[in-house]
Structure formats: C-alpha cells, structure tokens
Length: 101
Length: 425
Image (cartoon, rainbow over all chains, first blue to last red; front, side, top):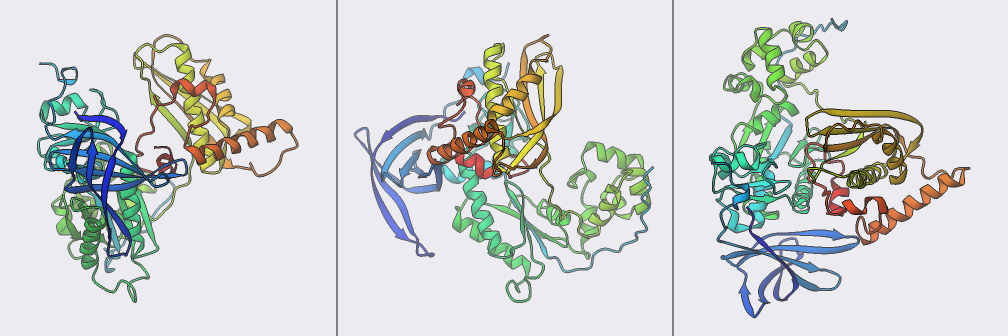
C-alpha cells in the first residue's frame, strides 16, 4: 500500500537554476525547510506541469535518499507547497486488504 | 457465406521496413518508478482505486517477475507477491510522458499515430531520402536515448521495426523490456516459428478457437493458410483477407475510426445506494458525457442508460429522440426518463450512460427558439468559467453530491479525451 502522508503546506525552498542543452532554464529544488527540519534533496524523479484552470502548477517529485517528496511550484504566485511525503520504510499492507488465510 | 470472393495470392512484402512501433514498458509503473526513485527495483502495482477488489492496471517488471499480472485484483496480487506496493494512478504524469513521446516522434516524421497512451507508430515513408537517411535501428536507439534524456534515466521502451503496423507491434513485443527488433520478409518465417497463435495481437481465445477449428495451430500455419480458407471458413468476413495481408507485411491497419458513441460509467461507491445518491451519480455522469460531446464538437440524438445489479443482472434502455442534445441538463433529463423505467429488484452496483447517433454540433447557429439559445449560452458560459478556473468550478446542483467521488481515471485504448481529462486532473 502506498504510504504517502498528505501535508499540503507552504514551505521555504532554496532552488538552483540551470540552463540545459536546449538553453531552457531548469529548476532543481535543493533544500527545504519544513517543520523545523532541513531536507537536502539529492535527486529529481520527475518534473511535470499540471493545470488548475489557467494556472500552471509544476509538480516536482524529489527524494533525499530516505523519503520521496512531492512539491508543487505555483508559477503565478511563485510559491512552493509540500504536498506529500512517502517514507522509505513502506509499511506492510494493512489487515483490511490482506488476503484471507 | 460472404459474397466477397478474394482472388488474392500475395507474396511476403519485400519492402525495406519503414514503420517503427514504440511501446513504453509497463508504462504507468515505470513512470511512477521514474518519479519516485525509492520505488525502483521494488515490486510495484498501479491501480485506479486503492481497494481490495480494484485490479492492477500496470505492474513493474519486478512485480511481473513475482507472478503479478495486469488484471489481477489487489487481493490476488498480494497472494503471489506479499511485498507488492500498490499506488493510485496519477494521470498528469502519464500525460506529460505521453506529450514528450509525441514530441520525440514528431521530430522524425509528420506521419505519426498514437495507438494508446503508451504506444505510438512512426511511419517513415517519404522521409528517408533527406531527413532520416540513417538506418532505422540507429534511429530506434536514438529514440530510446532521447526518452531517457528528456524524461528520466529509468524510462525504457520497446521498439519494433517492420514493413507494416502489425508486424512492427509484433517485433516490439519480442524482447521485453527495452528490446529493439526488426522483422523483414527475410526473417518473418523464423520469427513466427518461435511464437504461439495467441502471441499475435488480435488473436485471443475466440479467434484461436476459430483457427484451431480450421486446422491452424501455429502462426506459421496461419501464414501459409490460403485466403479463401481465412475468408470463407475461419473469419467468414473481410477480416480474413485483412489477416492474410497483415501477416505478409502489407498494410491494412492505417485507418482512423470515427467517434460513434460517447459515454461514462461508474461502479457505485455504496453497497446499498439510495435513490437520491443514484440520481446524483447519474447527473454527474450526464454532465461529464455532455462535456465530452462538446469537447468533440458533437451533439447526440440517442441516449442509452444501463444498470448492473448486485445479483449480476443487467438492464439497459435506449431511445432516439427527435432533437439532438449537447448540454448536461438535457442529457440528464433524457437519461432520467429512461432511468425511471428500470426494474427495482436489487441494489445497483454499476451504472452508465452513453450517447449515440452523433452529428456535428450546430451550437454556433442561433435558433429561432429562445429556450434553445439560452441552453447554448448557458453551456458556453459554464465551459468558459470552468476553463478559466478549473473543471467543475461551476456545475449543476443535482451532481454536487458526486463531485470528488467519481474520479476520472486513465483512459485505455483511445486517447481522444486525454487533453480534456488532464485539464480536469
């Protein structure tokens, strides 16, 4: 079972910006301050845009090696939001879905 | 007996392969593993709903190695792979990869087609002289690399190259994952000799039985079967001639099918649904069906409603009306007329609505009747507001109770409403 914990809170992000081969600016969120803790991201999984009406939201799936983080960047308001955290230690399936013995 | 008598005796198509088929391996599972690095190398299943009876719509290769198959329910999958991780589908991610794949394909040829959300075909005819003069195997490897560069390093795809679409798809399924195979007239017989009848796309249990009844047990026997036998005895239609050509590398599948019906269905979320909640679900289904109609710029004369009961019984009713519909309120009104006639002998488990008898919409034409114009203007105003602020910002009060409960899921097969779906996700 997916063990994602929904957070849905604004967070502070320090991001690096690079130009890639196509000379487009690419963003890499490096550090996040959340709940008094500092998370240093090590890898980007996937960055994809979504639409909310006419507003574009960029979704960043990041990892720090111990957990997966889902971040959203609002391209209009220029704000970052932490959507969910999934811990590395995926818990076993809950008993309600376990097959009958 | 069909009157059509083919006089066909074709050789294998000797043309150099010009069709390249791309198939993303376990697409949804691979995309999820790409997005969430901690899921890599783990058995992963993707499902539309996290309940024990929901089925696995995609399984990672690690899960497949443990015996998990697409179509298994969650409970069955957990029996064969206790460590399986199940997650829900996330359509915007797949849409992003789908668009990236289209972008890559379009950079080689204008003649491309998406067979489904994770499969595409590039037709290189007419582009080989000046643009793509490298061997197609080199281009195939380049596409694999570009997919890794532009989406992520975990992305893998199978590529098949052949003279027609059917053989290209067959080639793409030979070595999974991450294979690249070519089928030409020179190795066709050798390739088919390693396959079973049901390995061929389009040959499942029933077609296999038809072929077996005519004494055809292997793909090679199928290839050697005369066209008269296939047309008159096996398929009893022009399909036999299509198979005869298809197996020999001649193109028969380069056709676009028009939209014939538009609809939605929903497996109910309550075991004992009340009349009120049923009508709220029906209203929502009608509204989304009407949205699809308008998205395709169509209106429909016919409406069909079906219900499946807890006992397994099925009821449906359909009617052609005198005037076409395109607005959610109109579709709901007509569907309710049919829905009220359903028998009440058990609890409902599943319900659906579809519109047929489609015509091009004449919404732009102002009617003499004021009521019709108001309906058009109301639909246009609602669509504009929803396009600006997100789908279902404004909707009919009757469907309000279903908002958030009926979720749009990923489409299989056709991707005609994919843009619409992703705007709403």
